[in-house]
Each structure stands twice: as C-alpha cells, then as structure tokens.
Length: 221
Image (cartoon, rainbow, N blue to C red; front, side, top):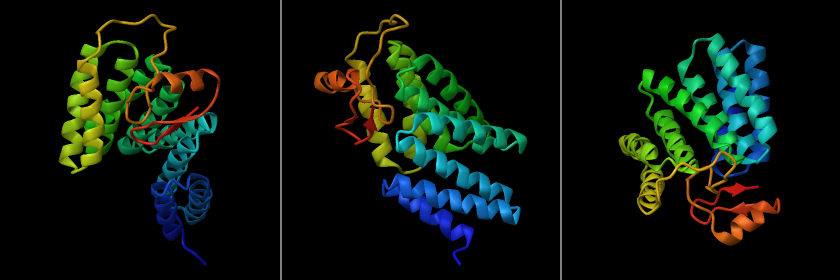
C-alpha cells in the first residue's frame, strides 16, 4: 500500500508535469491518509498541492474554496508559510477573473506574511502578483518596486525562468502609459507571468473561450 508521503510526492510531480486532474486526486488521497494518521502539517501541505492543481485546472470556484480552507487551517496553526501560500492562491483566483483590486489586496497580505518569515518563494510570487495587479489597474509606478522585489527573490533562489518572466513584465511596463484606469476597465494580462494578451486572444476571452499565454503557456478562460 502506498504511504501518504509517496502519494504527496507523486502529486507534486504530476503538478510539475501539468497533469492537474490526476494531481488533484492523488493529493486528495495523500491528505486523507495524513489526516487518518493525525499528521496535520503534511495534510495541510497536501491541501496546498490540491489547491495549486485545481487553480491550474481552471476550476476557480473550487480553487478559491480550497485556498480559503488552507488559510483557515494555516491561521489555526499560526503557520505563516501556509498563510502566505493561501493569500497567493486567492490572489491568483482574482487575477484569473481580472479582478485586480481584490487580487492586489490578497497578494499584498501574502507578501507581508512571507516577509515576516523571510520566505523567498512566496515573497517572490506575491510581490510579482502585486506588481501585475497594479499594472492591471494602470498603476505602473506602483508596480515597479514589487517587480524589483520579485526579481531579487527569484534570483536568490536561482530561478532564471521566473526572473525572466518578471523582467519581461517590468520591461513592458516601461513602455506603457502610467494612468489609473476606470474601475470597470479590464487589462487582459496573463495571471501567471503578467504578459499582455494580444488582440485576437482578448476577443476570444471576451467570447468566453480559453486561450493560452504565448509566453508561459498558462491557459485562461
């Protein structure tokens, strides 16, 4: 019989391989076994992996529920790492919906928590998220320092691909007009890497169709 840790590692590998639906099922199995053993912290890690797979599978409603559950568990344990992870996930869900004001709030909270424990991973991702959310609202000057913080965090972790994503977003911001946008205006940005969707992709999104980011491959819609 497969032990829960083996199942969890398999779920993480499935997530990395973009096999999200199988990753969800495998992480859920791991969580059930961890809970049965009374291993609360690893059960929470399995919940985090389940949520990450779910948002990548584009089930935003379920993903939000899972990240809210993750936040609740993290707060009950006073675990700042999982609080930072949960706020990042909630920010991602809002970003997929182009709800940049709510996304900025979630990412900002996640960043503040991650800074408290000097966690580079979620400091980087939440800072990147705040930058993208600010950009989505037309607040380009506000976005820049968060992009810089994200670059530094990803560089410290030797994550060149993620560094290139943020650098690209920062470069694009340099060529855009800094102007706060009306509340109901949508800027169509990839929720993962912050790249702007082209005109054809935007038209598809407006029609409710799915599109893939040409830069990082994330599917939206």
